[in-house]
Length: 132
Image 1 (spheres, rainbow, N blue to C red):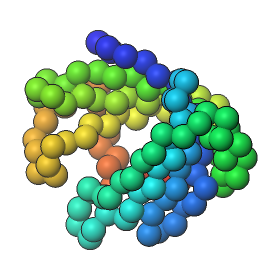
Image 2 (image 1 turned 60 degrees about the vertical axis):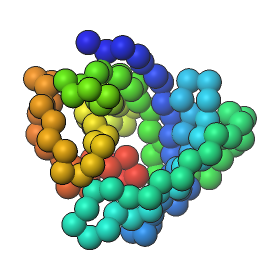
Image 3 (image 1 turned 90 degrees about the vertical axis):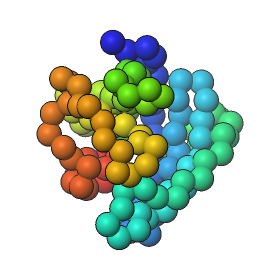
Image 4 (image 1 turned 120 degrees about the vertical axis):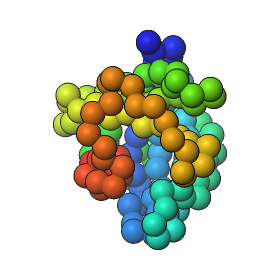
């Protein structure tokens, strides 16, 4: 059962192999996020994020490349203490797509997959928000 819900609009100013620069508006807050490239054989990557003014974020979305992503994020507690699933329900161009993600405490952590998790797509770049 979900414990929270957020509406997210996001776009990418830069989508390079070395990293991305993302603008995101989540309900009434906005963020500029820079993500680095994961090291070979790993999923973890450097991430820097700063809250910015929603008006500025709205202006910066005009500079974004590709499709602006519109999604609803549902927060679902995981069976493991302190972990949570982020379940994204996409709208617009990707309407009907649902992706569940969990941030682990360390890369080799084992988690129990809930019944709503289907195909594993961690290594499939088609499901990276930056590629949509």
